[in-house]
Length: 137
Image 1: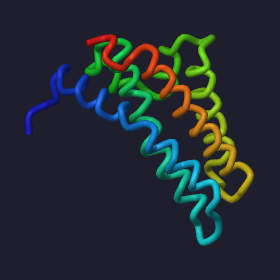
Image 2: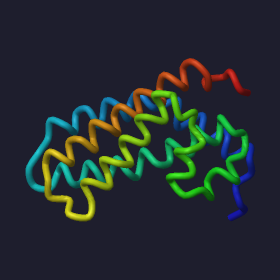
Image 3: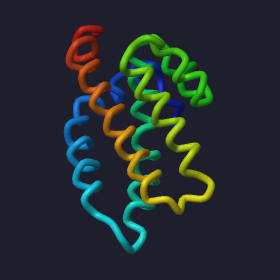
Image 4: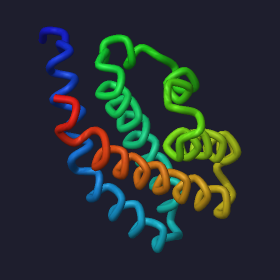
């Protein structure tokens, strides 16, 4: 399979960000579920969804997805305007995640991770509607 081009990364990022409302609804519903490892699973799913969303958003902002996807998470977060709500929610998620892991036993910490993740998705949605959606084509 050939390596993705910048145009491929841009298309993929726009497609993913256009469906952000669905992900917000999914994780909000997940806050109501508990027991049988559901919160732990929800945190894992959130990580596998949130980090790509951050990189896709930065792919559109920076117009250099090939470089962006190589960055470690702290460097990717640092590319966001540090006074923005988007950067603050990404940092809050990262911090909450580090408090939750490696033990992954505190229900309160799991809920904080999910809440911080939802806040990031909501800010990413605002950014998408204000700046990203069709404005940088």
